[in-house]
Amino acid sequence: MSTASKVVAQNRRARHDYHIEEHIEAGLALTGSEVKSLRGGRASIGEAYAGEKDGELYLLNAHISEYGPANRFGHDPRRPRKLLVHRKELNRLLGQVRRAGYTLVPLSIYFNARGLAKLDLGLAKGKRKEDRREDVKQRDWQRQKARLLRDRG
Image (cartoon, rainbow, N blue to C red; front, side, top):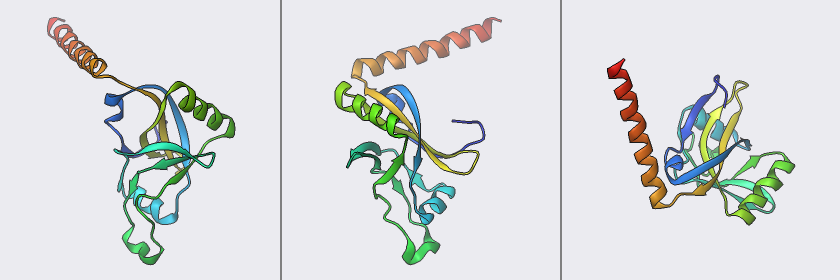
């Protein structure tokens, strides 16, 4: 994700529930009213996931609110949205999901420097309860260490 991007929606829970092993930038096939809603920041990907449908990759269960002025040309807020990735990358990702038990988790939706809507997709493995506890301990230790160094020096 570049520095000149505007984040529209984030899935903050994803890093808590999953080990993110790889980031993939995917384009989104959207209608005009969906783009207008995204520009207004009216989207949620907290419960969303990416999955295969007819050999293609789709963003499922993401909520992009209806755009009021679009009136009768609006869209269904929870419709499946096609993800645009290169065929070679698509085959690699689907192979990982099928064989190795990975999950494709949407991390954020943003507009890149050219103004195109992109999805930051994470190739992830689920965390167990012990892993989450260990992460909390590590985070607390890093915070405490930083505090000690700051007070000391």
